[in-house]
Image (cartoon, rainbow, N blue to C red):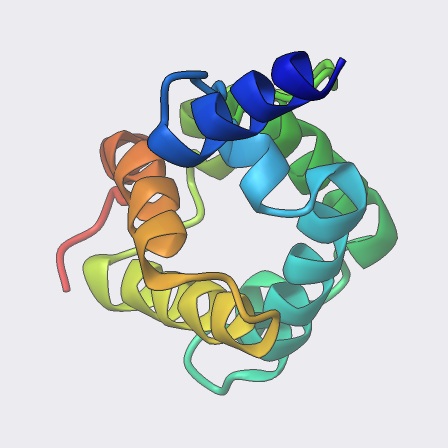
Length: 140
């Protein structure tokens, strides 16, 4: 028995046993962590003078739920997003590059508040980067 335990410990120490990498969903704290990050982000962006007009009259609880489901889904979690695609959801809002950058800044600030490691932040931002073309429709 001691020999078996010693072999297991040695395998773990030398890296002979591979541990599957955590998904981005796991690294963000699963659904609860994602919800908390987005809660902070929505708080910031909905109060920022540069973007708050986009959130006036919006049901922030509903938006929070939709964003949480979407982010949970695209990061590898078990959630199912049933809302509109990003292009349809943002059509006609006149969001420009500066507005989009406020969103990224707010998300980054929120990730830092929640002590998300920089490499995980970078993976998330890289995953979200393609949505830029669906969200931004105005120059600026």
